[in-house]
Length: 294
Image (cartoon, rainbow, N blue to C red; front, side, top):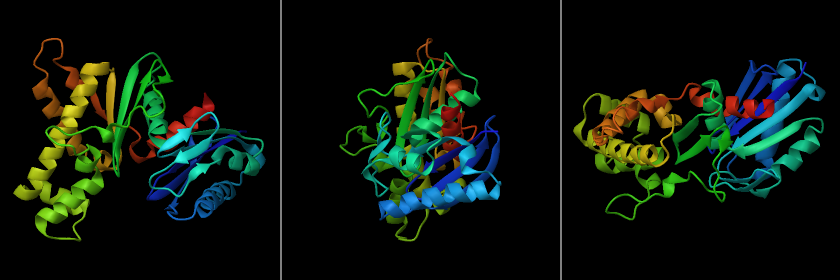
């Protein structure tokens, strides 16, 4: 029986999973990501894979495929981690190093948002449809899939965090990402220890100062989603990533705000295409495993 190893590596955590060939999750593991030494980070990845295999009594020779999602710029064809803003890899030959450790396995390496998008696409049974996956967490980015193909552009398609805010040169990421919201909350409340989780608790309780910050972010996100709707008219827009996954109320708030912009008869009702992630925090792992099964 063949098995698949999948990894979703972020600046905060390194998540791995062992899948059966039919896509069933057999084992999962999560550790803190190494932020300074690239070799230590790679060693942690290999050790995580080995721990999963040992826990399930699986021999490494029975691993048919390995898929890894990482943030930043990735050379998908060569499997090179070119630039990761929150990981210690620069031009790191990830596929080559994985081949050395698992010579009998098919290796797939891609951007983590693309992996997550693929997980959401396949779990909906899509094949000819278009889908945009928008992730909001440490940063903000999106991935578009059309008829089962990624729209990669020249290599940086979907980096909407660089979009400029209205009447400002501030980027969308510097305004609505998790760290950005946290920073604004700390400044507004004069509390350097305030966390985003605490901010959202205040928001739900009706705190006006925090409410103003969150509502501004909702409007900015809704306008970006509106632009996606009118530009590419996808069958589905999935709002995922840590912030949306932990606070589904924000998804409903964005959906309601988008609806306010859909005045033209041809646009009305398109807010219903905005959906929450099905796999939540495991979208990247499921998407990675599905890529190997293609």
